[in-house]
Amino acid sequence: MGVQPFGGEGLSGTGPKAGGPLYLYRLLSTRPQDAIEKSFVRSDALSAPDTRLRDILNKPLQALKAWAASNQQSDLDALCSQYAEQSQSGITRQLAGPTGERNSYAILPREHVLCLADDENDLLIQLAAVLAVGSSAVWPETDISKPLRARLPKDVQARIKLIPDWTKDEVIFDAVLHHGDSDQLRAICQQIAQRSGAIVGVNGLSHGETSVPLERLVIERALSVNTAAAGGNASLMTIG
Image (cartoon, rainbow, N blue to C red):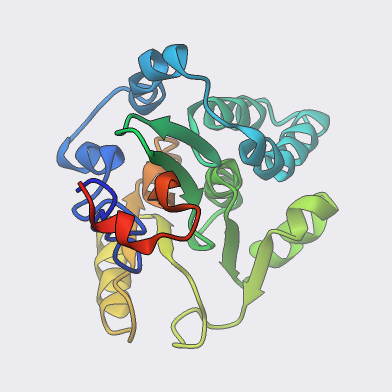
């Protein structure tokens, strides 16, 4: 649309109208875990992306990885490394455009992710995924989650919010990760559907599953800047 793009992330002009490149992966029943990472290899070779935000967002994940290594949790340690490599959150890429226009495509974390699981291992899998994209985890306060949070590093604890009842409307979250069976998932989806406000996606996984779709935990933001109108001539934005 030239200098007047339509958008779908909150307001017009702030994101791809019908979903960006990551949306296509929702149409697949299965795919390699590193498919999204590899899809950007060619463009990144031509123009280096800005990864400064990603480096900042990854710090809590690195703290969790170090904690896992010190507690002989090799599977969690390896999973943190895997998610860190696969996550595209915090990366901004410059796009092609006409003269006088600067276009960028950024992948940013959803702010809060509700994590629902019945055991510690699944909670840690979800936590690693949430931290890999730079989000904060919302944990229902249980006999499992409360002591687990207390054992984690301070930097990780700061990214976890314990809540007594996640079904209340005042509890804020932008996505849901659930480990469990189909009956539990169906009940959770029904409860989520009854909430007021924006639609929240629910991602169901079986017990112990680690193939968390990280792209469901981020947003895609496209930004178009009319550099030709930087001097204040607003009428230039209608040219093209």
